[in-house]
Amino acid sequence: MLFSASATPLVPSLCFLAAEKPVNRRPMMMRLSGGAIGSSNFDLRTYWGTLMSEINQKLDEAIPVKYPAGIYEAMRYSVLAQGAKRAPPVMCVAACELFGGDRLAAFPTACALEMVHAASLIHDDLPCMDDDPVRRGKPSNHTVYGYDIALLAGDALFPLAFQQIVSHTPPDLVPRATILRVIAEIARTVGSTGMTAGQFVDLEGGPGPFPPSFVQEKKFGAMAECSAVCGGLLGGATDHELETLRRYGRAVGMLYQVVDDEKKSDGAIQMAQELKDKAKKELQLFDDDDKYSGQLVAPLHTFVDYAAHRHFILPF
Image 1 (cartoon, helix red, strand yellow):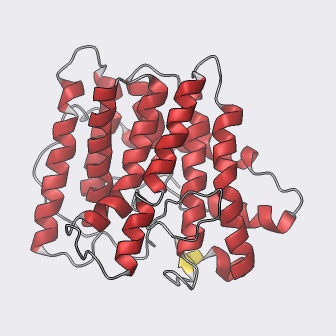
Image 2: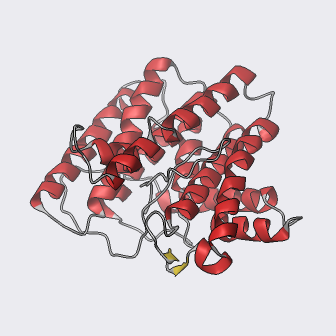
């Protein structure tokens, strides 16, 4: 799944969570109205594929095999898994560039988002949670390495992600205060009031006292929301612009999950249309102001279009 997450409350003292439900089904084909405003000439496949290659290389360099080799091999198995769409890091970079930021400033955080995402997938697949032996068509981490090593691999990825941000973000491109805001944003999003809360309510059979959209918003919207906001922070966005990105990202993350919903109900179709319209509406702030380059807004539009229609195959 592109952005969806199912945060697992297996939280060591240094860990934050963000996860994704398994993808072992075909997405529903919804007929949603509304064209690709500002994105008709933008090639998201090429843009996404180029960034994926760069991010994959940086992730490979960030997790070398060393002692204890068994842990690092398990970490690499999930982080570098074939089939990973790299949607969180790609959206992070796109949001950074929208405000004139250098993608070199965004890469460390982009990689960190993928590490956190992969770590939570490892935990989410464990028998005490979703008990899923397969992830992206291949054996889950615990199926290959055992429950104990899988748990440790996930635990190790969380702090490594934050170390990646602190150690590799260029100080000449990003002020320290901004780095702290990025770390706080990730912690808030995936912590006990974010994704973990969504997973808890889901485990309890939710939504209980919460609105029906609570679990979807926390589990499936939060990862895209966090990715967009972190990119905006790194690009120098204002607080108003960040709130626009927050609402946009949340809608995109929820949209992907709703479209991927195998129930294919009329209610899901209506919700998907509303989420698509909401995401596009948020981008009007950037469409209507000449200070934002249309070519830099286009990736954010095409994220919405891809979530709604899946009009190309990602270059895995």
